[in-house]
Amino acid sequence: MRQLDINGIKAAVKDSLAQLGTNIDPKVEQAILQAQKEETTELARDILTTLLDNYYIGRRDCLPICQDTGTAVFMVELGEDICFQDGSLTDALQEAVREVWQEQYYRNSILRDPLFDRTNTKDNTPAIIHTELVKGDKLTIKIALKGGGAENMSALKMLKPSDGKQGIREFVLETIIKAGGNPCPPVIVGIGVGGNFETCAILAKKALFREFGSPHPATEWAELEAELLQAINETGVGPQGLGGRTTALSVQIETAPCHLASLPVAVNLNCHAHRHCKISF
Amino acid sequence: MKEIDITLPISGELCRMLQPGDKVLLSGIVFTARDAAHKRICEYLDSGKPLPLELKDAAIFYAGPTPARPGKVCGAIGPTTSTRMDRYTPRLLAEGVKVLIGKGKRSPEVTAAIRSHGALYLVAVGGAAALLSQCIISCETVAWEDLGAEAIRRLEVKDFPCYVALV
Ligand code: SF4
Image (cartoon, rainbow over all chains, first blue to last red; front, side):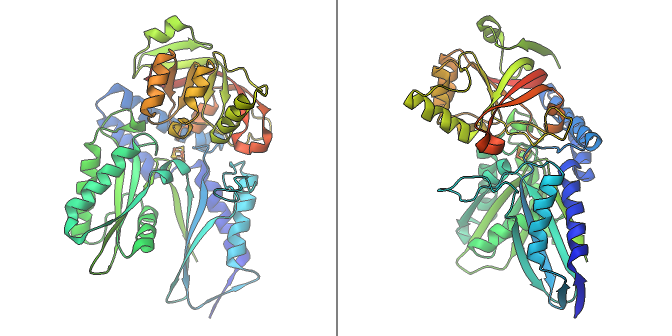
């Protein structure tokens, strides 16, 4: 068994959470810079320039790049041969959120109950923690600050197997067009294909955690990603939904085997304020 | 890009000159209100309770900032999705609200109400909250602190950039 000290893990998670709020992924910034050069309308270019200026000011002034500092989402890949010393991982993650939200002046956005008690928990907990058991003695924690605007425009559909690739394409485009400016485009599109109802949604979320802009390892899926990205950028939704070529920066698909009767597809949208990272122990 | 300066409250004359896609720089007083505050405003109107803000000619910004760091005027601030306020907006327009600031599309009913009241719907850039924070000169919570990020704040803004979406 490998022993891992909880205090070290918590400190690393806190560092990542504090970085994520104010520092954009350099690859996203690069993609926006590129898109800004290629945009054809003055309005779209102006919005992309504003985003670039904002990333700079966020870094300089240690201010969140978006006021919606989101739900903290953790995807934990836990090696079966690990045991924790000096505390519980669940508690450490929740405490990290509680402390960072206060120390970094992030916004508390979590309510106690979705319907009957919509009062603020005042420390942004509970964070959402997904855990997957993996073989070996490694621990990987993927961390995201997920804003509500883009999450709200996400969707899942149980397609018929006969709907095929065309069905996936239509559903993705329909989701993007319906979302319009709400998810703060340019967006990053996480897509899950396969599994069942709940794993498909998790696949879409997982796709957003993949390194920004990295293609699916299988050629046919990587080609579908590229094809969808092009189709999305031809919809004309554009930056902030005000028209233009830059509707999405990346399309990332994750897949899983599925039942012979099914073709589940989930689209998890994320805004340009893409705050995802990964730490390994 | 050409920028049009607007001093709030906006005059009807200036409002009529604006076109969708125009970039404007707002200066003056803006109140923040999100879902929970809208709900409460309408409850107060229904029961005839006095409101903590004057709706006539007001500018409403759908926003809930991050807390300000010590010594700072305001934290990061930016628009939230406007369509969630659609249910309440015609009521607020009828009470005289003139300028709405948010992001994304409005419902057909709200679009019609904005036009018939001679009001203005502006889109601010979502995810540019550090930059927009620099345009806030003062920020004061005026009511409903219990709503946390959703409390009503009175902001004084200077050259706050937006784009005309509906007029
Ligand atoms: S969708 Fe993203 S960029 Fe837009 S307001 Fe929400 S968190 Fe911020």
